Image (cartoon, rainbow, N blue to C red; front, top):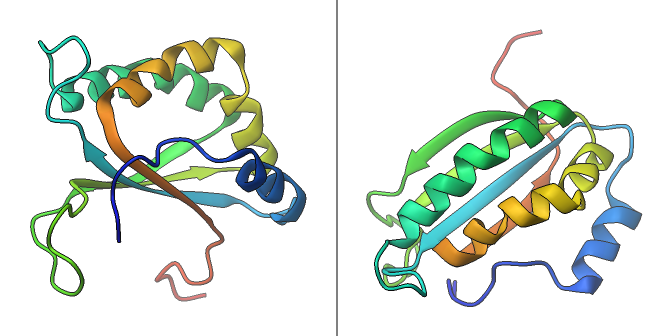
Length: 137
């Protein structure tokens, strides 16, 4: 897995998400992140810029009913390429794909998201549906 230069979806990826993701299902966004060592200003780290983004995005998440399900630091790659491994994995749940779209196209969110771009070397994002949540029904 090449963890560089992928931070934003291509127009085709975004159009496909809008057109093809089930409209009546919750969506869990799997974030696979690798920080820049230093941001463009050379003073702060990518992790610092991303942490600022994380704080600033909370009101937008609340507004659309999103919630952080899980965050973990990657300590080791057990299977796969060890070079350029991600540093953090986040799972964020949205009530629907439309809630995600509403948040990520809000002009105020786009302003806050500049710190995401500033801080990340790689920001993979995968939309997933929950098939099994570990609970007995």
